Every structure is written in structure tokens, then in C-alpha cells.
Image (cartoon, rainbow, N blue to C red; front, side, top):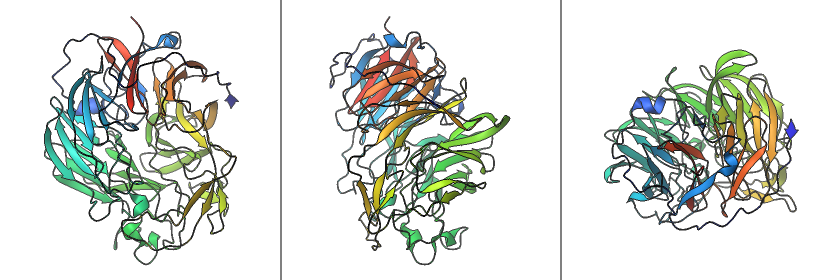
Length: 547
């Protein structure tokens, strides 16, 4: 593995933040919005970016190639959009036929993707009384199907809006904040075969995880899958005796992926509760910290794989399960690849969930010394204690929900790795409805600072190829996107949107937004021009090459 030297980061000029600055023409945009099932299944994305990850595979790879290593240095900001309901954004824009859809809190916007001009806004108040840890009013984006836009609200309602006007068509509830004020939502919905699929948040405050599918036309419920089995169901015994399964977490608070060839939906689940103390939940605690493979027609479980059995460290497995058709150890296979919060990159056979291999990407990991032949961690006995124990990675994980990407040209998988440790403490405490359920928590280690690195992983060989250390103070939580133009775009810890060479990680371009980036980039094209867009701080930035 080669560490490339990071270039010195400079400000490259000031930019007016807080206003919509339009450089493009002001002509009409398309009023014919129609995203078919075929459009959602098409891969890779090109002119349009139809869903949260671009397509349903989770690869975040754009086929656009107008922006290249040779000209990316000329990339310039074209416009900035500042939502009325200003807050730290975690949204990935969706672009369909020249219209960009973004969210901020419980607000949805349609913008002219060339200029940032607002076409419509749908707004509802933020919900008071939510447990802050569960959603904090974040919203990561929309789904679009035919002429409808779907978004989740902070109180776990699924809204269906008219894509051309923003008018509400229907509203259904999939969480229950009256029963538990942590039962909110933060994700973007996923549309599969005419169903809008969602999952609530709040696992750290006693919400029992569930994945729900609704008829995308009518909003009627189709199926649901409990991520913690109930009495009489398979694997119920992995929670021991008692009632810990009723408030055990394992919520699926990020969108999943879908494979049309095998007709399988893949969804990641969060940690079990309480987070750091496991005496109330002896056993593996299925299906926490898993990727579950479901039949999208019925919601029935096909298979599961658990990354961190009986998790005591808050190692959610909601990181994107990326679907790759390619070589592994020289053999072409249907793969699922996940860079997991626990410090290992996993490769699975997605047709049956068979474990193929795992690679340590965070050398500071001390809770496990490896992964055995069946995919179970070989633990070291390092666990949280009442007096405090150093645990690596810490509560933020060795990576997190920010998006990875895969480039079929380079055969490399790109993700942002985080290195940091905590002092973790544990003390048994009873579950109290409406309160956080950690038992007990973590502390930063004085003098230690989290560091992030952009990593390129060779899936076939199971090796780390190159890494690009980030400058900054560990504040940004930004994901990646790769392109057919030979680039990887990401957000760094200094508030820069960056581009590096996809083959070797050489830094090529950056733009300092002046804000923390808690979102992932995407790309789209309008009138023959390729754009790069990313949410940074409380704004949406769009970039293109000058005419």
C-alpha cells in the first residue's frame, strides 16, 4: 500500500454562500417527469442520477466522462442553493430530466439543475419532542418513481408528492413517536418493483427495528420485516430470555440495494441495544449488525450475514452493501462488498450470503485480531467496563454511513476510513421508554484526534492499493463517487470537495466550501454539460467546466 503525500490545502477564492447564484440559461426545464422501473434498474447512471446511490447497486459510479484528470483543474462552481429551512445537510441530490430534488429537514425542493432556481417547495414543520440521537431532523434525500417523489419525515412518515408541483398525494406513517419519541427517520426511500421501502431509526433508544414496504402508487402497506425476530420465529433465541428483543434496536436507518437478476433486496441493520452492556441480551442478537437479504415481493428472509455478533461497541452495519459483478480471487462472481464500521472490508457471495473474505483496513483495531473462515470475528476480549476500556475503533467506527463507490474500470472500491479510539464504559441500567439506552457511553482520549483517509481497495485481490490521508480535524462525514472520466470525488475534513485520480489517488482539484461536509457527491448532465453536486454545510453546490 502506498501513501500518497497530501497537497497543501489553500483557499481558492471566496464564494457567496446563502444565495442562489445562477450562471446557466434561464429557459424552461422539463415538465415531463417519468422514472420507470427500467430507469431505476439501468446501470450505471449517466445523464440522470435517479436514486440515492445513482442506481440500485449502490456503486455510486457515473458513466459521465466529460470531466477528466486532464481538465478537472478547471472545474468551477456554477451555483449554490441555500434552503429556507437551513441546517446541516446530509442529502444526496437526485436529478431527473433536468430537475434536481433535494431535502432539508422536512422540506423537499425541486430545482432547475442547471441554475439552482427553485421550481417548487413542499414544507412541513419539524417535529418537536423527538429524541435527538435518533434523527436530529436530518434527511438524506428522496426517491422518484414515474411522476412521484417520495420522502421520509423526521417523525417517520412516508410522503408521496407530485414531482411536477410538490403537492401532497398521500402520507403514511411507518414509525410511532407516540409510543417511542425516538421512532423517527433519516433515510432516503428505496423504490423496488413498484414498492417504496423504508425503515425507521431510533435503535439507540429502544426502537425494535423494522423494514416496511408500501405500494408506491397507493401508499397501502405490502409487507414488513422485523429485524429482531419475535417469539416462535427463527433465531429468536439469540436474545436470551426476557424482553430485550422488544427494545433491542437493529434499525435499518440507511437505504439498501437491490439485485434484479436474483430478485433480492439487501439491507443493513444497526447495533443491538443497549449499546455497550450485553448482560440483558446474551447471544448473537440477530439480526443486529447484519446485512439481510429479502424477497422484495414478500419481505421474507432469504439469508443473512452478521458482521459483529453480540456487539458491545456500537458497530452498526448500515454501511452500503455494494453489489459488484466481477472477479474475486480470479473467479467471476456476484459479490456483495461492504466496508464495515468494525474495521474490516467484507466480500460475500450475494446469491447465498456465503463469506468469501475479509480485509483489515484499520490497523488500530483492538477488539478483534482477525476473521475466521466462516466470517466470525476472532475477538480479543477487549470490551467496555465500568472503569473504562480503550476500544478501537471508537463509537464513530472505522468508517460509517457515508457512501463508498466502485469503479468497474479500475476494479477498485473506494471508501473513507476513520481512525480513532475511545474509552468505553459499561454499567447495567434498565430500559426506560422514551430515553436513550446506551448503558453507558464513551469518552474521547485526551490528546488523540480522529483521522480520515480515502482508501482504494482491490476487491479481486483483497488488498488495499492506495490511500490518501486527509488534512483537517475529523469533522466532516463525507462519502465518495467515482466516474468513467477516471476520477474519485469526495469531501475532506477541511471542508473541501476534492477530486483524485481513480487509479493512483493523486490529488487533482479541490474547492473549499467553508463548511463541514456531511454528504456524498453525485453527477448529472443537462444540455450536454456534466455537473458535480454535493451538499456542504447548509448549502447545495453545483460545479461544471467553464464554456
